[in-house]
Amino acid sequence: MLGLTRLFRYATRLAAWATPHIQKWRRKRNEDRTEGERHLAVKNYAPAEAHLAAAISKAVRRRVPASKL
Image (cartoon, rainbow, N blue to C red; front, side, top):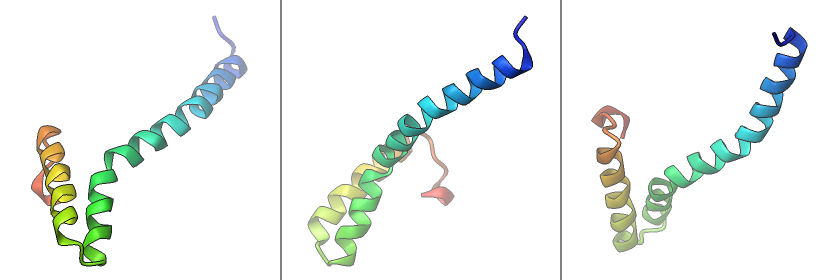
């Protein structure tokens, strides 16, 4: 049986390893939406439309509710 201290160390190592991977995954997942918003802010409408359409199609595939888009 693992001691409580050893279990805590393993959990800490796992969290330290997973944190950068999770942050990278979140950035990649929201990339189209943020790029689309950035293009809209500078009035580049064609690229904004492409990025936002891609973001919407990815959200539909993930079955995200419309209220969270």
